[in-house]
Length: 472
Image (cartoon, rainbow, N blue to C red):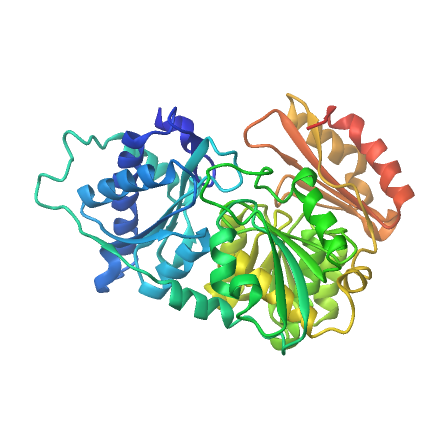
């Protein structure tokens, strides 16, 4: 049963079948064994290296699953610092603030309400994915039995409840400097953890930030249901926010996902700002303050992002898709900032971790220091034509990628960093990336060109090699 809920980057499933309290106990036991052993192998000998931070989101099943998870951690010998109901980036902060062995958040992020799960991080809030420890956690959890390992052997750990909100708020506010400029922002919390986090960090209706007026949408997060799916990448999730921005004559709209580690921005005209365009704009802001620094970005991003990083004097670093890879490169390349198309944004001064709160704080700060509205700031970055991500159903994914290389590879530069990227921009004014789905017989195409006509022509030329277009 455990195999059903372990995914590439986290643990997730419907509650109570297959994900239930017994499984939560096993996962707590396995995660504790892995995290404490990992810290010991790294030579960490501080008093907190047997301590694990545990938090939970607002889902109805989260208190029960979190309680059993904590029991499992304790039974293995791990000590728990329970920080209560918090957004996922709060856990990343707490691990670093307290110098713990790791942390576990009970959440299913943007999934519907019947789902739940766990996001596990090791010391310094490094993510635990399939290749970085999740396979080991699954193995250890599978061997753990509450009847045998139920903490009767005298090695049980302790639980301590800690309120770290004051420290977290101070940390997030250190990224805000609007100079008192009047800004009106509509925030859609998606009935998720942003409904708790935003009023704490920014004050009720933005009152903690001089000049800021926050109009709140879907901030009620204790009812266990969502007005819209808590995934800001879905166009349907942004319909009400876009209307509200125009009606309220707001400077900006922001929509968070369920656990508030991701966000999407809407400009003052109600237009959705692509996360790669937002990354380019924020990268320039950070590079003014850290000249020459590296900026890490999702390799599906617009060519304009790489060009603008260079233009601003930074070092562009392409990353494979996924927070495990982006966060690792932030550390390895000493990146000042990183951005993904999914709406994760990473910050050097936030332990290289992603944060919805800090992304919002930075966007407000950068906008406050400009005399232009958001749409005019983004327009010069949106200079190329993008297909968006197109999915194709095909069984022989490797064969299709080989055929694509055969047909177009000689016309440009080819690399295999994540799927295949064929860059014919210099010669023919277009480039594309094709990646395999981990879980389905799908190929995912992102194509960009200098103009709309070239983009459409090349999508038509590439598509027949990739299978049947999937419309979901």
